[in-house]
Length: 507
Image 1 (cartoon, rainbow, N blue to C red):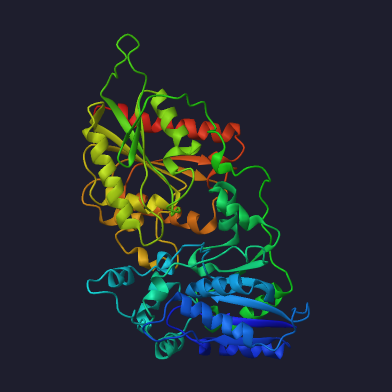
Image 2: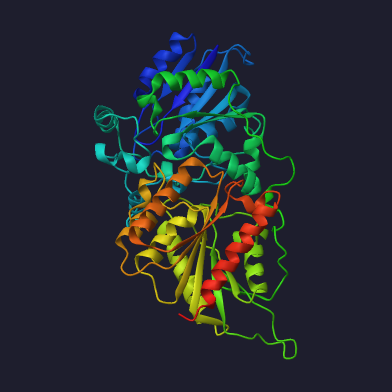
C-alpha cells in the first residue's frame, strides 16, 4: 500500500487536493494532504518541518515495510520543502514526485523559479519584504498555464489562497545528499511547454548535471493539462501517481558517453586570438604575420547562447566547445566571432539578458578592430525571444539577424515573459524594416518550438520580411552536439557563409 503525502505550491493548502485524495483512497492507498504553515514569519525551514512532522506522525512500521511505502509529492514551490524533508527522513521515503516542479539543488532558493516578475520586485522592496499576496482569478496565469481550469476553478484558487510568507521563497534549501539515491518521478504538465521529448533533448545536448535525469531510477509522465492538474484532471493525476508509486514511467535514453555539451565542434575551427571584454569574448581573424598586429577593422558576428541556463554552468557558455567553435570558425573566414555570456537563468530574466546583449553590442562596436557598421546577431534556442528588440527597432548597422532552432514566441505557461519578448508580434509592429533573417530549422524540432517558428514565418510573409532558410531535415534541436553528419556540417557551414555574405555587402 502506498502512502502519499501531497504538498501543493504557493498560496494553496491541503484542500486543493480533495478530489485526488478521494481517488487515491478509493484505490486502497493512504493519502495525506499537507497544509504548510502560513504565519508571516514562516520560512522554508518551517515548511520542511511541517512535512517532516507529518512523516513522523504516520503509523508505519519501523523500518518501513515494502508494502507501505511513503511517496512524497511536491507541486511547484512545494518541491523545496518536500526535498528538504526527504533529505532528513530518507530512510522512511520510497519515492519523490516532482509535480510540474523544478530540480532545486542545495543552496537554491524557490524565488529563482518564481515566474511572476512582480514578486521579485516586491521582495526587493525597501524596508524588507512583506507577505506575497495571492493572485486574483485573472492573475494565476502568471504562475503557470491555466489550461484546463474553468472560471470556477480560478475563483476557487483565489478564495482558498493565502499570502505566501516571503522567507519561504528567499531562504536557501539545505540538502546533505541523503535523499539523492531515492527513486524519482517527474510529472510534466505539457500545456506549460515542457514535454518528455524536450527534457530528453536537454539531457542529450545540455550541461552534464542534467545527465542525472537519465538515471534508471528516474521516470517521467506527461499530463496534457496546465499547472494545476489536481483541479483540471484529478482522475488522471491520481492514476499517474499510483503508476509512479509502482515504479512505472518513461525512462530517458541518452548515450552513455560524456555529455555532448562538451563534444568538439563539428567543423574545423582553428584557434585564434581571443580578447575578453566584460561579458563578451572577441575571437579575431589572423593577425599580420610580419607585425603581429591585428588587421581590420572587420565585420563581426555576436553569438547569443541559448537558455535559460544555470548561473554556475560549467563550462560557461562562452568557454564551451559549441560556441567557441562557432566563433572560431567565423574568425577563420575573416570576421570577428564574438560570444556574449548573458544572464538568462530563468524565464523572468529576459530583460536582464537583453541588457547584457545590448551592452555586449556596444563593446563590440566600440572596439577599433571591429567595423561597427557591419554587425550580425546570431541567436540560439530559448534566447530567440531576445530577437524581438532588434526586430522592433532595427539599427542601420545590424546587417543580419541569424536564428538557429529558435523559440520565437513565448511558450504556453510563459506569461511572465511579457509582450516585449515576442518576435512574432514584433514583426507585425516593427518601427522600420526588420533586418534580413537567416533561419536554421531542425527537421526533428520539438513540436511546441516548431509551432513558434511557423508563426514567425507566417508573420514574415505578411510583412514581407526577407528570410533565408537553412533546413536540416534529419536533425534535432541542438544538432551540432550530436554525432556530425554531412547534412549537419553543411548546414552550419552554409549558415555561416550566408551571414558573412550579408556582412560583406556595402549597403
